[in-house]
Image (cartoon, rainbow, N blue to C red; front, side, top):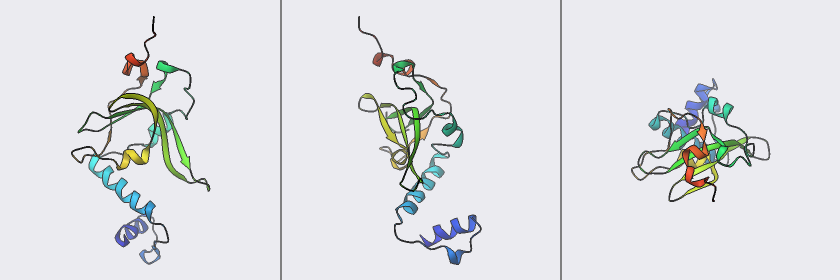
Length: 155
């Protein structure tokens, strides 16, 4: 961990002798996993441009199949896919961002609408050990375009 902290300190222009880990190091351990997975996948899962276009939670509530999906995540070595329609930062009591919560369609064992968080997407690996990726070629589309069977009206 000392090498990791010294690297961060150097990048921030802080003398390495001032880089000290205090108390809970879980944030540092999580950051190491995120950095390693970002290097493997060659991308960030939630870059600034996605954060800027993704509507806040509950803003598409009531739209049903007309809700727009803005980002697609997938496991390259299995059939799991996450389609995010909304999202926002999860803050701790001091107002510091500790995670990012999405709402959207999850295709796994079944297709269902629900919540998922960035930290899980960043840490989980598929059956072949590959991290989850963001579909760089995905264009926004409605939920009913992605899963029409979920939004058909019964006669």
